[in-house]
Image 1 (cartoon, rainbow, N blue to C red):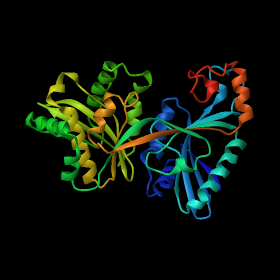
Image 2 (image 1 turned 180 degrees about the vertical axis):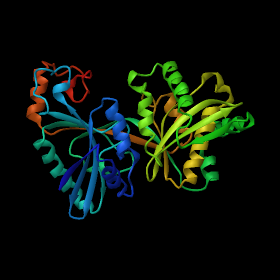
Image 3 (image 1 turned 90 degrees about the vertical axis):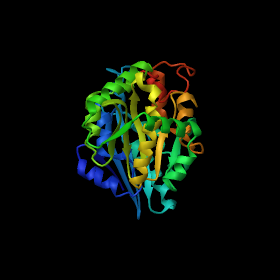
Image 4 (image 1 turned 60 degrees about the horizontal axis):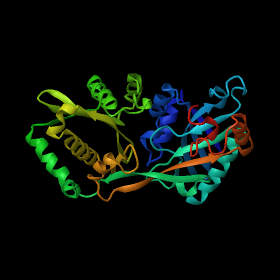
Length: 348
């Protein structure tokens, strides 16, 4: 049995997700809603049953007829492509692993029947779905995961020396941490966040609107802001989102005028302490802007043995339609190499 729970069915959606003891924040209704508001597609929660085995998967559906390349050419609401929201996704399962492949076979037939042409997945780092995936998978980057097992003293001693040194310096500089579970200091967060995005010349999609954060803020008990205070002023900030086991360093920034007082290391260590006290199992710091760049190495300094491959998945449900869409684009096979789905060409 497969059912699509729609975005307006908020209570049913979240109750279904939280019935999975290993649920992650990326599956919650508020997270999907925030990306619908950003124009990323129409969300749905796929819920599946096979005997006593259950599965959930969040999809963002995009009508291919609304892609600029196909407007006025394709019939609307006939063909769609799917993706998981930014972050991590794919199927979460509970029950007998022997039934997982049967669920996925039924899911493929379901997608084909409903005009879902292709699918792009950002796989959960610590869940087994990738092993069962019937499509192309690849890893181009690594992420850093800080395991929270052991005592805080053991975790602290595992940090690279420079982290411990900078944390001690930050404490001497009188830095304080503000734990803001309700987003009361959102304006301070946005001031520093947008300033950081401008300084680093981030891509346009990272300049998320205030309404995006306000929608995320509805996920009470799954979101928290951390602010570093220096002489009465917030100088560094980070948004952390979390599910039943994992916390994620999501978005944030630092006022460049205060790099010297070492707020970044202080902020990360205080978040790790908070996550540990909350009983979470992992703090996911993510990766860099490019493959294993300076940002990546900085994050690795908090978990020298925490490197994990980040995988994406690409699958075509309807090969005949996929090829026809590529033909309609009149695309050379070498154009936009690596982009998926190819018929969107990276701009649609």
